[in-house]
Image (tube, rainbow, N blue to C red; front, side):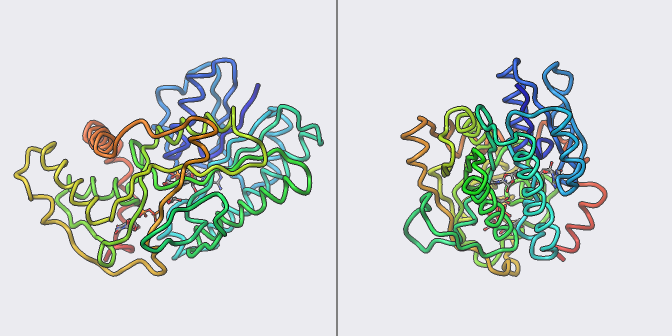
Length: 347
Ligand code: NAD
Ligand code: DAU
């Protein structure tokens, strides 16, 4: 069996690739990634020589290339994670998100339909999506699989659009898809443009911690390996033409999360309690900032028995340890174009 995983050099994708390569020696895993600023083959050094692993450098926006690899490798399944994934970047460059997240997804759908030639037995197109497609919650309530789509950022609008295309290919061509909509991930290999790794890096460097607005925005955090385990379960056991929400049952207001992170970092760095908190700086809010995300993950729990395996405190500690033990990784991704990005975004 041959499975194509897209975006496997990125944060979540690298954990999914590692899990599949190690757990399924009889499945050939093809990792297709364009290696944008967010893609990093260092994330996969431990599996790069495995006999069931092959890296393909390519862009999902390039339809000819996508058709070529489908013809060559005869994929039986696709797990699609490649995307532009950062909300702030989508506000400054929305078209990049339309290209990769919408055009790129449609190219993969077209290649799947044409290469599988309507014989969909044993085939599966798994689209990895986000809870942000549901928009923003008020103080109460949770996102269900049936919650109406209401995206607010160019990023979430592009992901919502790609979800609609996947569903439409199921209805129109019978493509056996499955979609998951997951909450905020954190863990090793997370690019330091997102809240947790950016703040870990800034605490190490004694730099200000830029909290948007009043810091009272709420996210539901899930350790990345728990997401990878959910993807594995849904790929193998989820029902086709279904959506599953994945979440951490773990809501935190940003400011409370940042204070916990500061506390844990002070201990790890041997700094006096309260040192890192002094770096907190309230800055201009993100335009269209969604107030609250929170997932009801009952369906995946009841149908597939999935639940998170670590508490937030445990996951955060593992994450901090990983960054402190992988300073070279952090230094290499924060040099060069990262500095320019940071200046533009935060000054
Ligand atoms: P990421 O930005 O860390 O990685 C994205 C990967 O896709 C990178 O390796 C990049 O090189 C690759 N890529 C980008 N454009 C490409 C293109 N045109 N062709 C081929 N490869 C390309 O993203 P992530 O945080 O790992 O997210 C992975 C997926 O999970 C995305 O679809 C995202 O929407 C979704 N998701 C993320 C989260 C989260 O909290 N990070 C939560 C829910 C869902
Ligand atoms: O909910 C799932 C989504 O989670 C994924 O689909 C996205 O790919 C992923 O990037 C993430 O989106 P968020 O916008 O929630 O994540 P981010 O880490 O950018 O921000 C988390 C919260 O922290 C949000 O309320 C904005 C705030 N924030 C973020 C940054 C980068 C700050 O206050 N300061 C910052 O510098």
